[in-house]
Image 1 (tube, rainbow, N blue to C red):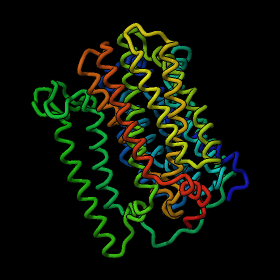
Image 2 (cartoon, helix red, strand yellow):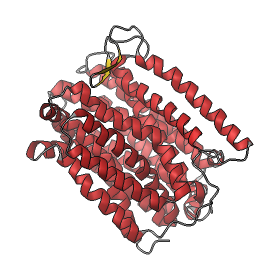
Image 3 (cartoon, rainbow, N blue to C red):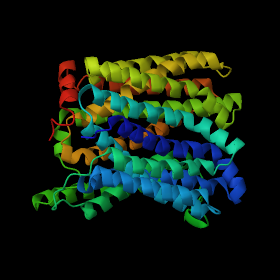
Image 4 (cartoon, helix red, strand yellow):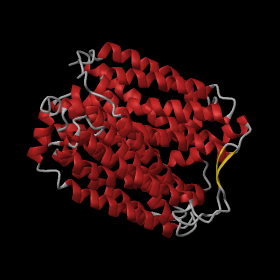
Length: 488
């Protein structure tokens, strides 16, 4: 148990902030980077897409590494890698150098940092402090995603896009040093524990292709190719003249890899070896149902933000940074909602807060759909976005609390990896689904945008129904009380 819980929580919050801000800052800076590096926007898309692919495919493996080697070592290693990748990216003189730093090295570092920070919160804090800790972590993560375009625009316009990476070079090593001070040495691990490299390779391949398909479907189509090729720099990966979309090819291969992974893991169990993901995780009540609830909520959240950003840019002719200012109420409200959720969870239990948060988000999305017009004003939309952000802050932070509450301490890293992977895939799927609805008409069509928001409302309604399967308020209060030690 740490003697410096405040310092530890601040460190975990700083880590999730830099990881979340990274790509959102980069989104705004892409046109400037394209000009400075004399490269195409299509080539630079691989920087952002590559980071998402690396992170999404390695999160579970990163969580398992934390279980085997300890959250402290894993966090420090991840922070060092993240800083090293950021340094390379900040010095980049070409697209391959930027891809190496951001998409590869930073992505690997983030896949270690994210689950290690969640596992640390899950095993360190107890009772009311646990609910508040997850509230801080979730609030910072949500606010960072919303504030990223504003910060990125300011850095790019008034300083340099390279400062988006240089900040990480300072903050990530500082977080590693603070963890050395605030977190006790990792407990001695089972010397027979192993990483299961065969299972890790199959899972990484399957998840990589799933995230790739969800990310590329809007541009290339689900089945028929929309006449767009696929290239990595000068290397042609998929011809624009081919009738089949690369997404249609990726999904079956992903299914084969994931089925092979499941069979491989069952064989590992039969011969007495520890699988990458233990079935015990899904035997706990809150974990499995919590993942389903989180998936629907995250799909709605990510899809809503995408639809509104695209719609505002199309109708109000806003630059990305200006669209970020329009969406700023969400980030601020998420921070407030997360803190309200943390306080409420300590009194009534986290499941009650999750349910209330989902309902508030639902109301916010429905209000946004009702008032959405091509000439909508900032204040009118801000009212709906504030409601949406308050609900998102309340629900998201305590959902993570519920998902991890009953997880055995020895599997905290793996569970955190599964939870973050679940959210990453859900976010990509939400953008693909709601973006598909938006594409039924022109991006400036209020009708299509309204239907996309109503689709988000349906997802939130499904999440609300799923949350009622999580148990009674008293049961979830008990989960908070046993949080860190009830699973030893």
